[in-house]
Amino acid sequence: MPVPLYVVDAFTKKPFSGNPAAVCVLESECPADWMQRVAMEMNLSETAFARRTGEGWALRWFTANEEVNLCGHATLATAHVLWETGRVPVAEALRFATRSGILVCSSGVDGPIRMDFPADPVKSIFVPRDLDRMLGARPLMVAKGAEYMVVEISPEAAVRGLRPHLGGLSTLDAPLVIVTAEGDPGSGFDFVSRCFAPKLGIAEDPVTGSAHCTLASYWAKRLGKTKFRAYQASARGGELEVELLGDRVTLAGYASMVSRGELLVPLE
Image 1 (cartoon, one colour):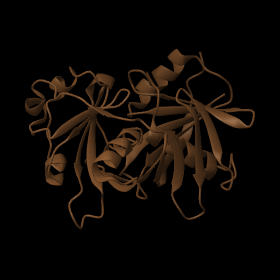
Image 2 (spheres, rainbow, N blue to C red):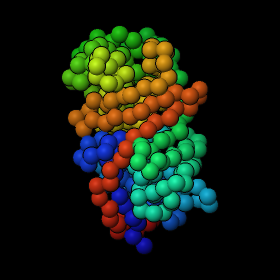
Image 3 (cartoon, rainbow, N blue to C red):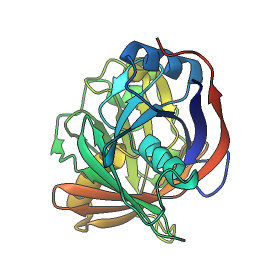
């Protein structure tokens, strides 16, 4: 049977901005190598695979190179697909069983999709050797969560204009390097960021939900607050509402479906 396939731009109200994710809705469990080949074919930063399991859904995410433990924008895209296509009533919250535990998504009629994710506490670390050369900017502070590295620079314009040496960043002990700065006064954003993941085969991820689980912990310490408006300043750009609630983070954003079709390659 053909597999329903959708492409959704996440963390944006407008098509052709935000972060695109492919979403496959499965009727049964599929081999991981088949899902990996589909993700390679889609060649987006993430392809999500959702499968109904009793009262909830199983959800997995793959880059073109490997399966990942957490992906915010593809979760947002999946929730949007399930509500938009009528598979789940909009008023009903979604519970996804994932590698990162149960993730809950809820949607208001006119408001953004809200996602409940695990927080990623950070600790300051020594500045890696030659990091300034890799970034082309002077690091002010460097911290690390469970996996991701956060590098603060200044000002906001430095983040927006960054042209890092991706080969250098791929040598760091982190699959994702987040470069961030406090938002300029009057910008409307508490912080801005960009995310680079050459180790995962992603030069720059347009809008990264999971990175904001790390950024929420980082900026809560720096700014002494727990609720933020954030902007990921990639070429496509994306906006997020972020709130740190103890050991959880609420991420909120919009999504726009840009295509729907069928995957004709048989399951193997």
